[in-house]
Image (cartoon, rainbow, N blue to C red; front, side, top):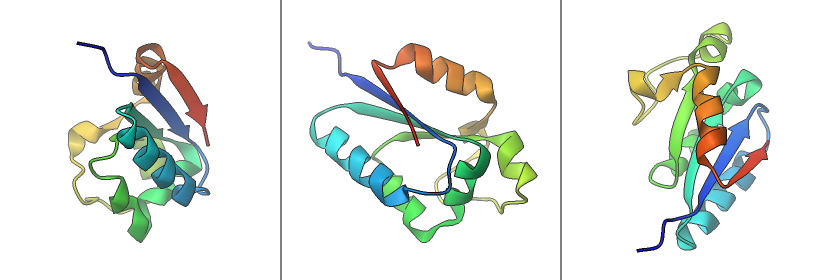
Length: 103
């Protein structure tokens, strides 16, 4: 059995949610496993209505420090405490993925 390719996406901007969703959809169609880490201003995207469209398309992690620093509201649909992490989770993603994009 062939190991699926893995794509890591670091999101540090509050822009481009539509592009991230489209990229995740295309990757899923190709059998690529996607992991996303939201940090800095990227955590603001968690409050957007379209954020829930990422469900089932990617493994999502959120930087707890950035989320709390921006005073954002939780819970986010389908997110629990284990989905929040530190920059160490970003480093793990970099090591695990075949490709890495930054938005």
